[in-house]
Amino acid sequence: MANRSPANEPRCTLPLGSLFGVRILIDWSYLVTVLVAQLFALTTRDPMYSLLMFVLYGPVMLITLLLHEMGHVAATKCLGGHVTHIHIWVLGGLTYYGADQKGAGADLLIAIAGPVMNIIQMGFWAGVYFILEDGDFTNFDLPMYLGDITDATPAEFGSILAKRAFQVNMMVLIANTCLPIAHFDGSRIIVDILIMCGLSMRRAAYTLSTLALLVGSGLVTWGLLLLGSYLIGSKANGFVYVLFGLLCVYSGFKLWGLVVDDRLLEDDLFGRPWYSQESNDDVNNIDPERAID
Image (cartoon, rainbow, N blue to C red; front, side, top):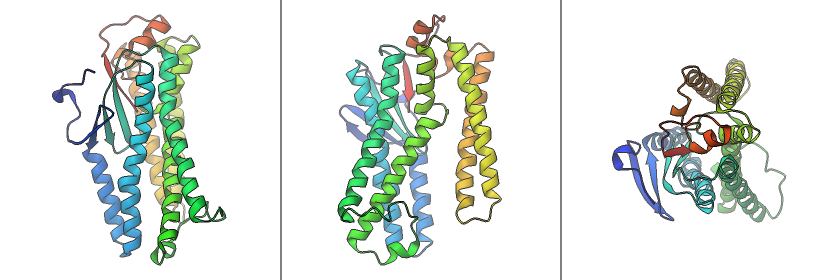
C-alpha cells in the first residue's frame, strides 16, 4: 500500500498509531475543540459534569469518528482500493485512499459505509441505555440538566453518557448525509447518484453547488433567527446553524467557480478518474489520491 510522503500529509497533526495498517493522524483543530469543551465544562464547577464532557468529547467522540472512517476504510478495501491514512479534524475525519476504485456505484457504497457505522453505534448506545435503565426509555429523549449529573450514581452516569453518545452519533450521521459540503458524505452520495443517472460532471457540479448555496442560505437564515430568539439554548443552536450554513455557502461558491473557470478536475471530489470515465468527460492531471470524509 503506497502512502503519501510526510511532506504531503496534513501539517500540525499528532500521529496516533495505526489500525489495520492505516495510519491515524489527529489534527490540532480537534484537540483545541476538546480543550475548549473541557474548559467550558470546568466553568460549572461540577466535577461530574466535567467528567462527562471529558469522556464524551474525548474518547467517545474520537471512537465515533474513527469507527465512521473505518467504515469507509473497510468498504474501500473490500472493493480493491488502497487506504493511506485517516485524518481526524474539527469537523470529523478524512480518509485518504488510492484511485483504484470501480466506478461511481462502488464509490456510493464507500460513501454510505461511514454513516452505516454511525447507525450501528447508535444501536449500541441505545442498548447500553436499555440495560442500565432496565428497559425504560421514558427519559431517553428528554434534555439533560446540570442537576441530573451532579449527584448521579455510576449507573445514572452511564445512562446519561449513553444518551449523549447516541445523540453525538445522530448528529454526525445527519450532518454527514444531509449537508452538501465538500468532503462530507452527502456530497459524494449526491454526485455518485447523478453520475450514475448519466449527468456530465459539469451538470453534476452545477447541481451540487446550487444545492449547497440554497441549503447554506437557509441554514444561515434560520440560525440568525435563533440567535435573536430568547428561547433557552437557541443561541447555541443558532451559532451551529450559521456555522454549517456558511460552510455550505463557501463550498457551493468554490465549486461553482471551479466549473466556470474550467478547473473542475482540481476539486477533490470531481477530480477522480472514475467520474470522468463514466460521464464521458475529458480527464487531465488527475490527482491519484483523494480525501473522503
